[in-house]
Amino acid sequence: MLLSGHHKALLLIFGVPLFTLSALSAAAMALGIRINTSYSLPLGLYATTSDSAAELIEFCPAEPFASESASRSYRTRGFACPDGAVPLLKPVVARPGDLVIVSEEGIIVNGHLLPKTYPIPFDASGRPLKAWPTGMYGVREGTVWVASTYNAGSYDSRYMGPIQISQIRRRLRPLWLFRG
View 1 (tube, rainbow, N blue to C red):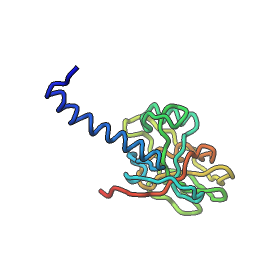
View 2: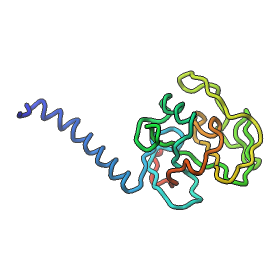
View 3: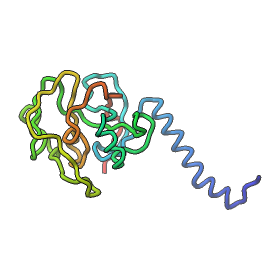
View 4: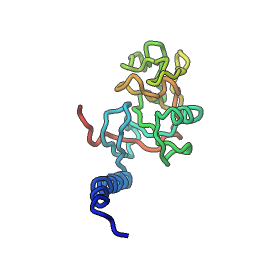
């Protein structure tokens, strides 16, 4: 079957860019580069690293937070996590030995209030959010706390509490960030 001139033009206009974007995304993944389009971190490219002290992690949330974040579209569909959604990318804000206080004002780590970490009662779609119980928590071995100081609407430890180290898929570092 031959394509008409109109169909050839549509193929060039839509097919070639889509194929190119797919190929670039696959190559980036193979090279250990992640594209962040969420609002929890600056938009840009992040490279995987073996540095265990890296401040950024990619992880699959545990239940019930996995289902909640996927069903509410906080995470898009994907293949990386067991629930069929993409992992979360978050900054690590507390490690074993740190003291975390969860309050209405936000997350306090070792006496320092982290900006934009106050829990919000509703998400952007007006659905209720259940904050992690207020209180003082010693960060236990095998866990970390994650929180975005970049976006007050981030879905992170202010709702999920500590993250098990076993949930971490990769550690990341910024490679190239879009400045707006």
